[in-house]
Length: 419
Image 1: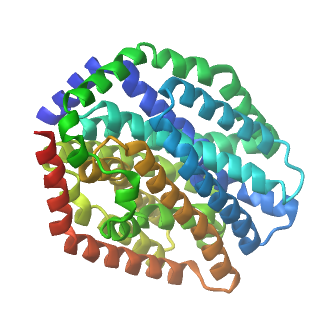
Image 2: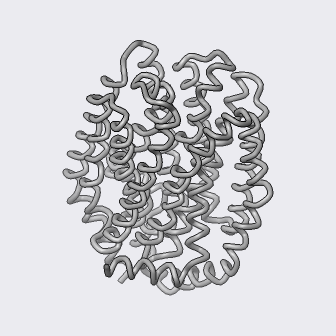
């Protein structure tokens, strides 16, 4: 009950900026795999693509977007958040409108590249960095509230997309999305950022007041990339985006294999979204109370169970169970990806650090569609794929448990540097 009151009080104090973070996460949905994959059947039919060929196009475009994200993501440390947000919103709008007019398979490459870079990459980056940077004491709560935009998109947009595809076709559907973004997105986001100049000045003043401790508190990007602990943590935390992207991208084929209707599967995403909301709110409160690092070994097992459900069951109810369990891990992962690296390395260079983290996530989501597609083309079924996913999760849980001591030691150093 106390946590509920603390969330409501926090929301009442910061309604506009928290809404900004939430909407940035929501609009990232147009570049997320769960949404793009809904159009996969139409694209494969129109451009005569195999599962592997379609997945390879998507993976290549995603890899290119991840490479660009490393450079563009760092700019948020130097560019006014308002200007950066306008740039990203314009890019996402252009990506949607371009997707509406693609006329061949090769044109899907720049379309996917633009959607992944501006949507999954930069819109998520804006949301996460803004919340982590400007809320020092309530970072977990801020990230958890803003991350609700992701499940909100997952609850609303799949059903909307299926309805629009049925009524208008895939081209007009993307045109509708681009038109709505063009008309309303930038004015809305700028209105939500009114008064941001004072917020930024306050942050800079606070940083200047503790400048003597900043060397110990904030790691540079170069230092982070030399830290041997950074890489195993990233590999483990990439399990949720890697696995869910592979499954979501081929969800049309998954539904066909299991005998589920696409409409039913789209409806089940509401359970995925609800689970993410529940997990993100709990994880946000726990991150503020106990620290995000202590939570790392405990949030992945539900993803392993989700994969096992797909391996064992074909009943339509399995779709709802699998998505709910995967949503629990996904909701916590949004919080931990935002909070863990701030706890470990400070916030002075968080934009650059988060750009690398986000790029790694993009690279993971780039590999999954192609790998899963090639395996499916080789007649390796979803049952074998999901058993492999379960083993990946089990290994990640064990590794994160073994890394607790060095991770807590690094976090303690950052805490001491702030005093």
